Length: 133
View 1 (cartoon, rainbow, N blue to C red):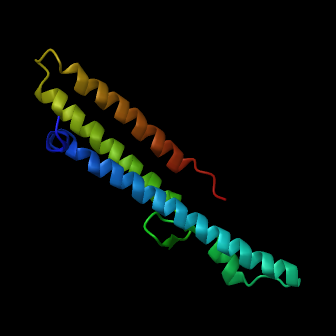
View 2 (view 1 turned 90 degrees about the vertical axis):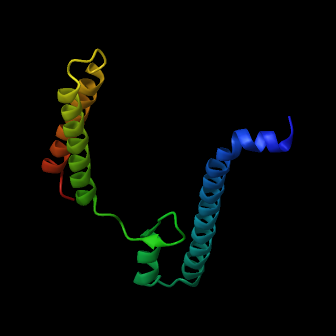
């Protein structure tokens, strides 16, 4: 087997390998940033000074995976989107089941519909009964 044959069969592995490399790069960058912030905090503690509030706020931010920082996320919008997506998938599966009801394999759509409807109901329950902190 030549390299050309190997590449022809496994060219698609470039994408997951690149994704893993970028994930590793992001983790290393996040670790470097955290380590430098801890050094700054340590210097404030050694001097007996209170760190500035901007530094504390910056330390509480998390890495967004693209080289930037994001503030703590608002989970309410995530839960709303979960309800919408699960309900949309359940509706699509119900329509597909209704169209293909005469087929032997139509039970698959019904199964997906029931599972996604239960997931939508669970996400809606989490949205409604969420504890405010």
